[in-house]
Amino acid sequence: MVLQTHVQINTGALIPSIGLGTWQAKPGEVQNAVCFAIKNGYRHIDAALIYGNEHEVGQGIRDSGVPREDIFITSKLWNTHHPNVAEGLEQSLAALGTDYLDLYLVHWPVRLVPNESSALLPVNPDGTRSIDRSWDMNETWRQMEEVYKTGKVKAIGVANWSIPYLEDLRKSWTIVPAINQVELHPFLPQHALREYCDNLGIRLAAYSPLGSTGAPLMSDSQIQAMADKYGVPPATILISYHVNKGVVVIPKSVSEARIASNREVVSLSEEDLVELDAMAANGKAKRVNTPLWGFDLGFDDWYGPIKA
Image 1 (spheres, rainbow, N blue to C red):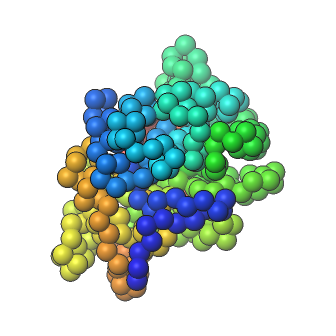
Image 2 (cartoon, one colour):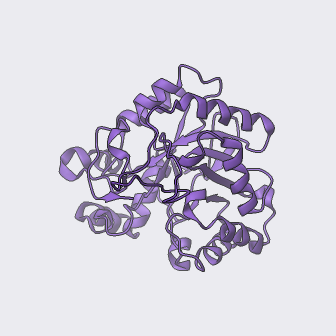
């Protein structure tokens, strides 16, 4: 198998199969990581307003010396901006220092209501998230379609959307989401969601493909055995798993050595892909990113630690 370096989304555009994730990249680290990644061949950078580092991401892109038009930049509408998508977009454009995005995603199908506790992660007096459960996500998507028409975003999509939320959105969309970015790895293969999105022409993108900090994927004996078989690190198996399936994958690292090695992929046998696909069903199922609003999002696999 010749592995694709790019895959096509439903706008006709090509997106690099492997991107650099910037979630949880600390201030002072992400600028250098982005610059190094681009100089070493990456052409896809995944950002978001809530990560709090888009200024540094933008500077890293400029530091690389690679023309803006050669880089695929993704950002995401944060939960507090559902009523004002254009405003949220402008904040990311200004921080990144660009006049357009290649892809803009609705980060979560949840509206948070800003209050005196926080502009981005507001909480109620009892400590629960300040969520507007009456908000209609179809209105958010209508506004996403409007910013798409302005040309400031070349494609629109969603992140962390389960089948029930996508089914509801189908009632009103005139533009099908190009991407659904979700947690995806052998311990959380999301087979039903993958099939559903494939049937609608929505491509999946995998975040936390290595399981995130402290997750057991990198030390799993099956994955290590497969890595030994191919003569590569476990991370290569986990990233290759997605590339072999035509899924966009966005591993995050600020280590130059790991950033470089994360671009290396191998062609996995059909037998090995089947083995990786079956790990969750065989008792290893685990979700590592579960925010405080996660349990009512329509996924049937919420397990693992709670994260804010």
